[in-house]
Image 1 (cartoon, helix red, strand yellow):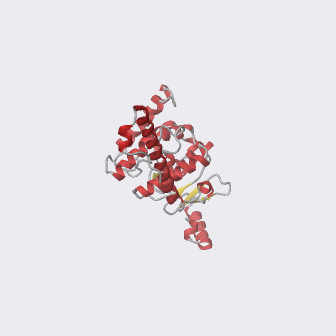
Image 2 (cartoon, helix red, strand yellow):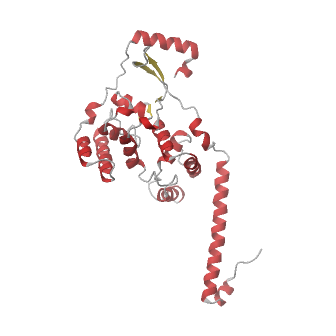
Image 3 (cartoon, helix red, strand yellow):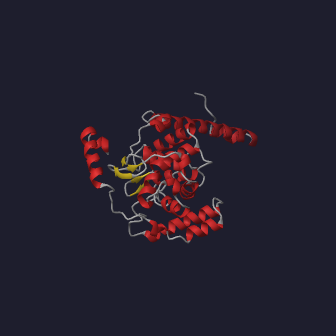
Length: 300
């Protein structure tokens, strides 16, 4: 193997030759590092799902009982997750932008990961420096919540990074945001923005007002802690105000819209948490029939 140079050679060399030696050493080091990174990615990537098939996978949704017109929703039947998938066009801009300003302000410009967030995660997991949050992007959060487990380890972080990059290469930003908003947990068994809108406000996501959208966008960071039904509603309201402030500062809304949202008592609009069933006899008859025909697990 050819020697790069020795210490003796370096001492004898002129200033110009020393710079060339250092550049050569840097080049070899960069090549070794690149090979090491590619090797690590290849090792973890072999066991990961194909990113291209992620949008085609079957996502659990709730069974719903309607009247014959399909306009009156009588009852949700769900297991651990209450979820309804909707199209990106049915997600109002207020929901999209409130989510982006709180979770990932550089969403439309990064390649799936944030360099500073990645460095923070490495320092936290390897040398135990920092709080360990890691600054995950929306793409990484989607991977963590929908594809991988919530395990806190360096190997899972590497897998998350690989899938995030692959997803960014295969899908548009709007497609990624739609998948994220359809699957992120909002608390109270509500997964996805449509289920959250129905659970907390009794309306479709497309009908959400700015004050309602910013409140819901505040939940995913800590759904149990920020729950509108819990004891930390002041903290929830504070996070909602922060979302409104950021949206105004970044130009997503104007001052009049921001002031109107700030002055609305959005918590007074939250639905009661008790489960009321419309047409209970009809609903229980249909539920029993479906359970006998398809089984409890399929029904939920």
